[in-house]
Length: 324
Ligand SMILES: NC(=O)C1=CN([C@@H]2O[C@H](COP(=O)(O)OP(=O)(O)OC[C@H]3O[C@@H](n4cnc5c(N)ncnc54)[C@H](O)[C@@H]3O)[C@@H](O)[C@H]2O)C=CC1
Ligand SMILES: NCC(=O)COP(=O)(O)O
Image (cartoon, rainbow, N blue to C red; front, side):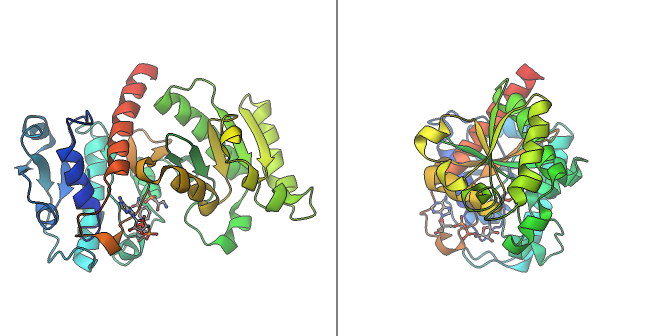
């Protein structure tokens, strides 16, 4: 579990998750980073470990932490260059441990994207970074946000809104939909997932009167996918597809851009929403929220989404064993 930006709420929600391990029935986990980030916000027991194999025995009595480097001076709420560097390094180490089989999966704590970009992180987000390290193209790695009420996939992810129409292609929608369907089978055990695809424009384009992406890109992609056997509908008007009755008609909503997907899930499931990367040979989850620098160090961070991410990682690892 890489601790994320040491100045964010990552260390606090990791520590709080450990405190709630028995009450919430959490599988053993260990932190990767600088233990000082935990100590800056928490007085509980930390057990230094030098290898993942030591985590299991240590977990009952202290939060196991694999120290990889020092993060420099840690001031909760004030991100630093050293902090961003160790967040990057911890992510790299954790991915390596999962790839080698030393960890059953990784649950990443939040990083500051701006801070990471400042220390040479060239990927838009951790999703693409982990995918690249696993040898998976970013086209075929899917960011899914999953909560008790809704699962969503943004087709385009961390790009400027102005760049979305040009980035939407039949190929990209097809790749994301196919990975999503397989990921639903592999990680959630849903044999024939129902996919609902949002339009890009108001009213899904109103038959071309309000934009042509639905006619030229989204609908052809859906028709191809349906012909290949996917249970998929759309393009649907995005504003009407997230109310409770509509959500009963599908298992996952594919959305055209970041906020179209993340606003509904964070509205419905902010405190237990999980970001899971589909299409990888390893399990990777994360809480749905960010670093919350504004509340770091105030002991007010809710660990709910982190706990949900730990639980989902365990469930996904088990489902992979059960479903291959
Ligand atoms: N998975 C990741 O690593 C993610 C990282 N980020 C990064 O986080 C940074 C801050 O992003 P924001 O847009 O401000 O989103 P944010 O999720 O950090 O904060 C949004 C609001 O929710 C509150 N909040 C967030 N998590 C909370 C928790 N567990 N308990 C109580 N309140 C909580 C914050 O105080 C703030 O009011 C950015 O640099 C962004 O790049 C954002 C989303 C995901
Ligand atoms: N808004 C979601 C987010 O920023 C998570 O991105 P990633 O770092 O998990 O790729």
